[in-house]
Amino acid sequence: MSKIVVAVGGNALGNNPEEQKVIVKNTAKHLVDFVAKNNEIIIVHGNGPQVGMISNGFDLAHKADGKSPIVDFPEAGAMSQGYIGYHLQQAIINELNARKLNKSVASIVTQTVVDANDQAFQNPSKPIGLFMSEVEAKQMAKTNGWDVKEDAGRGWRRVIASPKPIDIVEKDIVKTLVEQKFITITAGGGGVPVIKKGNDYLGVAAVIDKDFAAAKIAEIINADSLVILTAIDRVLINYKQPNEKGLAEMSISEAEKYIGENQFAPGSMLPKVQAAMAFVKSTNGKPAFIGSLDKVEDVLKGASGTKILK
Image (cartoon, rainbow, N blue to C red; front, top):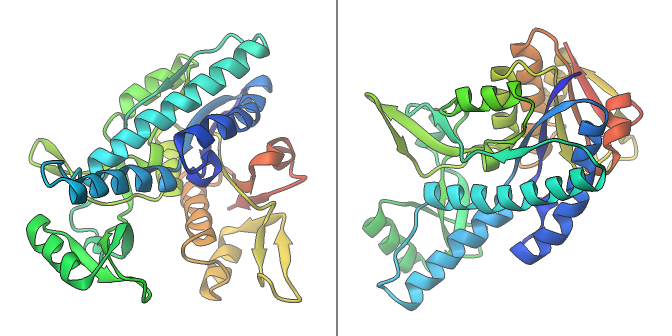
């Protein structure tokens, strides 16, 4: 029996609650395939479209009625964890019942500790929320303490930092659930980012990459492998070039070489590769996999996906 942390992208869950309820049924089938093969799984999901929807909803409500409060990013992130977790739990339970598999599922609203001195806070660069005029953006920044930037000629937006995860507040709960053989959904959207001040945790407006959070969870629970599921079959080098090539395996040193050549796009494949490398390094050689959600079985067999090795 293997303990596997599975990271599923927020885009694989749809762009709104109704769409998500449909899509998540297919996602659950693939996740339960792991369980049917006698694996213990811990699920980390993205929340990009979902947290954007929540954040934009509150921003629009505030624009329409000043009495409606602005809800900051930690709270929006926690809300997204709750409703995505609910949909995943329900879909997985229904799929387990359909296959007569006796397992329980739990989702944990998870706080992810980041370093207040992380360099990411010096240069917030992740755009979130609605587009604004320059005047409106600067007024919102002054009123709410936001960082704002012009976004590719399309208008001004709020920007927040994307720090690296260093710990999980609820890690003992997650470990206990895993030990008791529960299917555990944790660190949704990377978790709610918090910093520690004295003995207190404080939420911060930031976004944590879910793949890095999954690697941290995998390290904490001593997982046997990390599986990052995405929309492509294999990690590609020379992307969209005549010599484009899919990689069945990639060592840490090869990955470092490819990163040096800028083979992986910063907003998509690069964090997945870096998270996989972080897990392999922190566990002294346990494997990580990057592959397609629709080919989970083949990914684990090595017939699809990319295996990252020491």
